[in-house]
Image 1 (cartoon, rainbow, N blue to C red):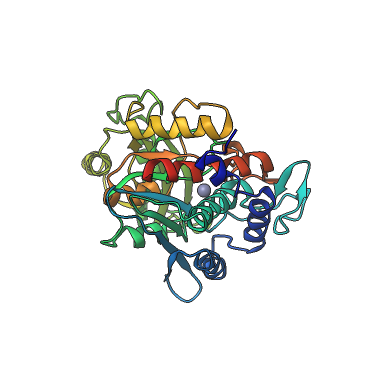
Image 2: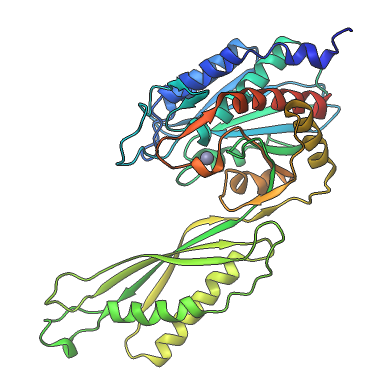
Length: 393
Ligand SMILES: [Zn+2]
């Protein structure tokens, strides 16, 4: 039996190399806030440059940076966009079984902050690009890699990269966020708003002389919680959700509060218009101002990420699922996911089908004792290599 070119290609992926790279990446502390992605960005850029890719480090101030790299194709086909992020969430207060920044290997797993979300997915994409470059695989379209700063807070890197004129056209945007090597093709949008009510302080014993901003907020939140927000449930994502998650106000017990601030986390489904929701909340405030004397409130959007959906029968989704089946032995059913990714920032520019597929465990993201299974990590490098070879071949 002779080895096929694809066997030869996949034979170049060494488990030890993928694991070592993942461990190296975990050892960079790129906890966000504050981010500090510059050192890991420089390191990743160096690895890709040595691998033969055209690489650019895109700075966002002195301590932060993203990486944009490209493996050139002939230009006969649209490109393929690989996206991962360089930052992680903080470690938290709970004690970990393994040092979160050591990248220890135990029980067939690599442990550490970012192992699932998403330095494993990042490592798998880097290895895929390196293997394709080293094998001199003829690509008919560019493989574009965007490894970004700031995904865990404001998508600083993806927002900056989305402004570039040289990103598209692409067949698909692949994000290696944790999916246990399954496929997610829809993600909820996020609309976070900050509400502020304004009153006037007075002595707590003479409340009639003041205007109580906390009581204004109580009235506003009670009505906002019941406000009908039109939406149609999505087959893969479920329904729209809203949750009032912070309220702060008041000076001290004997002072009528002049200011109260609340934040609301809304998750939207495809078809909902974020601006229309904000207008609805503003209209509610205006209505309350008519009914309640001295009521004053403002609405400010603090996070605005569009919902994304790709049709399950989209040919590129089917071809990607075939590749996953070939590389892992299991053909995943495309699903939706309730977390958001850099895709929300990149999609207005790329306008292409989205596929989330990464080796991490979605349930472990942002939790203590985060890990990635070594076998899933290696499978991810295999399937991402194969996907680029097939879709661009
Ligand atoms: Zn992530």
